[in-house]
Length: 289
Ligand code: DHB
Ligand code: FE
Image (cartoon, rainbow, N blue to C red; front, side, top):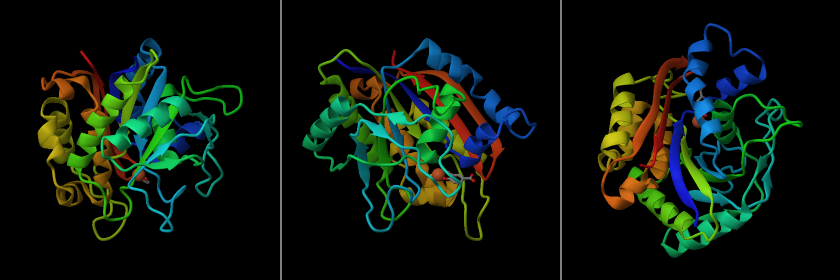
């Protein structure tokens, strides 16, 4: 039987990818950011998953205003690295897990969540930056990511966006789906994006450390309250792009303590840093106990 053993949460700031790709990670501006992921890279090696279920958002790269799926699951055997205007990032292509992905699609749709099935999709910084942060620098040809990845794209770019509550409930359904897969797989679920940031308009550059840290506290110890935050509060408090945080609730909803009603996931690592480009970087690793 497959099981989820841990969840990982991290921001996906594209400039972090550029800093890694251009060899700038030792510069004084970036050093404190990457220092926060030293523990995490070792933890990934010590707790190697068989599959990563990676919840992220596409930034009008694979999708556009032509078509806006609220929730899209990548069922392909592999996913190319997207060209976001400067050529694709020099990182390995992403190998999928079609058997587990199609099982999750079947189970989650039968649990009444409407998913879009995506058999061809390029993946942008929303997915590749978290992989780089957690797995380190990789050669695009000679290296590979440590395991297959199932991309799960959430629309947080174009209104209407899904509520945090729906995302939390979807996480519960994903956990049930994984547990009914008839193969012994260790699965990590990642919630990415956030924390507070606003990239445009009069409030561009907004950062809210208080909101971010309260959200981290709540996500660990009081996730049901975090799930109840209405979308307008994210926008007001964490900026227009702060809404990316609803994706963290999918990963949190998939943890065992939620199904068991115990709120006992173990926080292995917590990190928060400002600045990184226009965004507050937040990062958390939770293990099932
Ligand atoms: C930035 C952050 C994002 O989440 C994103 O998608 C694009 C840019 C930034 O901080 O610059
Ligand atoms: Fe983003």
